[in-house]
Length: 329
Image (cartoon, rainbow, N blue to C red; front, side):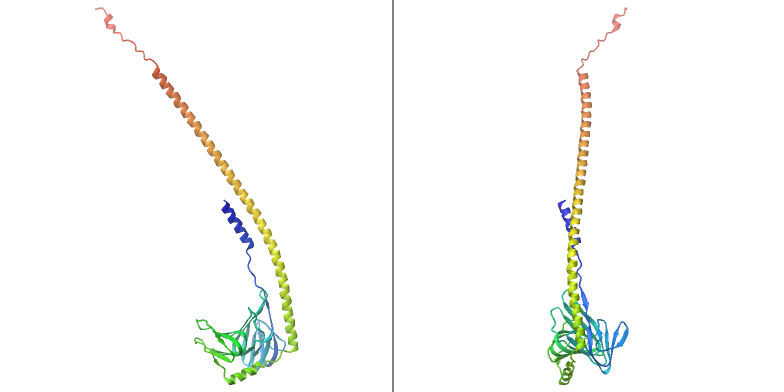
């Protein structure tokens, strides 16, 4: 009985205390800092020409039309340069409020994209550039990702860069060091090599990204303040919600305890009633058996007494007289 009650109470508390963890995120935006030639922004099926100050959001696609077209975009303190005849998709651009970390992910469908990661990534931050075959994960660096047909090339100008060939079953990345590059071909192992002098000169030119315009910086600062404000508001809201939830959980536990106590008392009463009924039935049965036994014993005693009396009566035999002897002859 005690075990049953304990199990009921434990299950009740477990149900009350079970909550699904939630993750809170807020969208970030990049800002166009420089445009040359034809640069198109595609969002929700609509296409428009990029202008300085335009917001770049998660899910958007950026196209440069023609070999001389180019765009420079700032994502916070980090910047990217998108070269001519290139298609880039902004896959992920969020801030995780619970851990205060940032996630940035881009897909180079074709063409070339140069990333200048000036902000040191904090623990939990993620900055990735993908192609159909490669994933380049930043450890704080400047690098170029090129996608041509079914072949990718990743070149590291400064810092360290982790590169993964998605087509290989082993799934083991290699780490590029300063002035190293690697070709990423489906089904082939990756081998790091030194960047040629010509390519190195080109990378150094790409490194010269225009300074963030003052109006772009103001927008970025405003965006950052809004995110920080949202983070603080969300923390307060989470704290309030947590306190309210604790009070609700406490009330639910108390209610459940009361229900469990009532149920336990009911069970005890039922057991007592059932025990009392069973005991009374047993007593009545015993009495009935005793009465039957008495009746049987009484009848048997009477019968035996009669038999004994009959046995004790003297037996008087009448003499037999032969009447023939009194006849005259």
